[in-house]
Image (cartoon, rainbow, N blue to C red):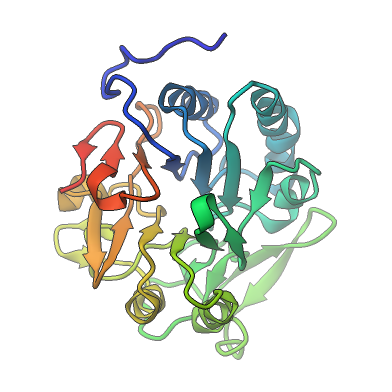
Length: 294
């Protein structure tokens, strides 16, 4: 039997929750174990992982993390009575080629959401997107073009290859085919008419409490914000900018009617995550360390 973690600082005594969301675990095994402990505590029906799943490493070492730790952990968890389904996307620090181990693992209850609109709980749908605006870093598997990139955005770098290697890549001349706008329009076209939509997008929308690296310094995506303004999903879950809740003073914000969330993450600390009920997101959205959303 799993231990009752109700006495852990930050966990309230068994409120009702449907979903646990966290992001940016970066291969830290204690945070993965804590994620499952929190899911057990709240008896959630779904866990959503918002990207940057693997340790910062080359493709073979990320693949080994999935093979030797994450997949065995999830197989053991799924065998427990009352365990939740797990839906995930990758993030800019995850190599695409190593991630094929998860995508092809054959676990029915492990669902890959990038570029898809999946049936979710209670008749809702969940859209996923791993891609982010071009970063200052050399890993380019999930970087995408958008207008208004800052000077520090690095246009060249490497992408992973199917054999686990790395190949040079440059965005120059690929602005249209490698754009966030193109991917978001494809997601928009796949949303069923009248659907109540949740989103799990690794990169947060620009100009919110979810994308700040310093007071007043916003680094989120203009295209993600435009998508949220057009589509107005019920909830949009993000990550990528670990420090944003600490800098902005809030882990949740709104873009129109859409509630936007970035739980943040501090590696080596207790888990930063949120829980909520599908039918009352605004009234139940709660951070595992910071309490209820304001």
